[in-house]
Image: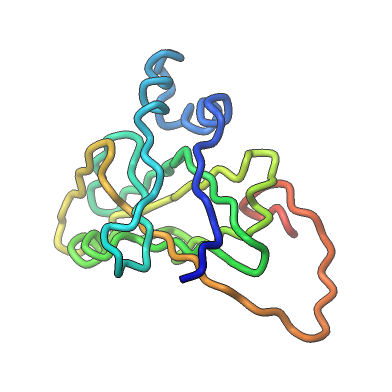
Length: 169
């Protein structure tokens, strides 16, 4: 088994910036309590491919609702690997929980971005059965899988990343 990555928390300062939309009236101490309770992603079993990501805050989504979740997590990984993010299987099956970008792609150089490589998830309850999703802080909501990738023989990419969505053009 290849050991190619490590999960870490982003700094408290970065988490405070990114959680402000979700907790606009929270005090610094309340945010600190949320930050301190963040769990690093883990695999549930020795045979699991996916690392479960846990929500730092409780939330409920009615059908059609969307939420942006700052996970408080960053992933340092070897070059030529990518972290792919998907909804937890059961939530996708029962509620049609979807990542808004369908599959999250965390590149190895995202770790060095100005936002510390903070992994965010924007998810939607796309239930057609009028089911509301309710999760507690600490509940798993998405999973990440590390995958190697290749490049073309004539690739000459040399740009430098500094951010997430749309930062590379």
